[in-house]
Image (cartoon, rainbow, N blue to C red; front, side):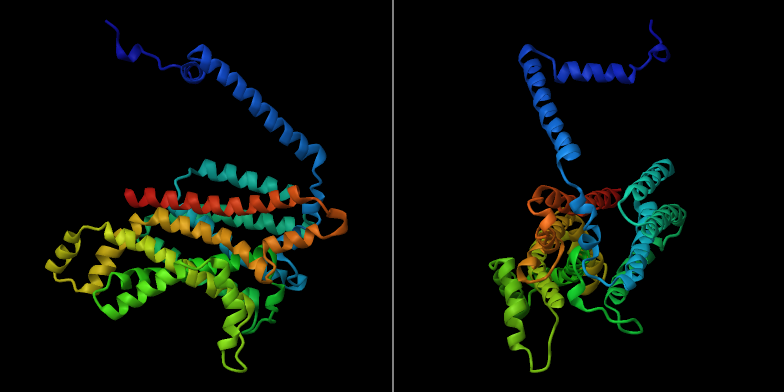
Length: 393
């Protein structure tokens, strides 16, 4: 008789070899397909590696890195941008430690890798020192977030801190109220992309929720107004709304009243995204059984409390994938502002490609820009998946 304690599980490499044999070489046909696929992958990866290391001129990125990131923002005011990065980095580290599931070892490993990348970046010594400081702030924020898990109100306080950081960041970038004002025309590159995207996401979310609730309302005037707004905006292309905001809106403003181009672009994104977001939230509202509202009324809750405490949290939870997908689409759609005269990340790319020494370097420039977009979109996707898993527990 075999004792279960004497059975030794297969080693790591033995499990891999069994998987390879069962899935890749379980017959002559699959074996041929595996070998052909491996050869094609080798050719493609090898060609990309050869191009990236011997043919590509990455100096187009290193020479214009500041232009890509901050555009024409005054160098004397760079401390404001570093302050914003420090605030965002600290809050990100605390969020990671409070809501993430990584161990301390993984945090230290990622922090060490970030420090190594900061040292290798093609920037001056002061910038390397500041990047290292922000990396350390993120790591310290992680450990602080882990310590804050024992407090019941820590998540609420952190959410309020994130919301408060948006107006503080806009104040630092734009100036006024004690700071030297910076002309909005020099808000270029990645700064402009992030301002338009984050402002659009933050402002369109409550408007979209209100439109979804209004469409479900029993009051005819509110319901039909929301239906009219949603259907009209969804029937128009975003570029058309951007042109209307930039060209036609000033025609309807009173004499002497002028709204700068960045605010008009943000308003266009907010109104456009809110209509699609309303439909995503409405789908979540319709997925909630009517018994939930009836049980709330039986407990004595009025309609506002029923919606706020019972219906809306469940609807938003069910709508997380669609909402985040809408936010990712909005972030990528910010590249359209270059068509209406704003110099965002894509606008800077065209400016760089017009430089005589870098004419024709399309692949390097657009691969770098695509990498930036992918990093932010992938981060949004991963954050939404972690939020879904956390809410399911």
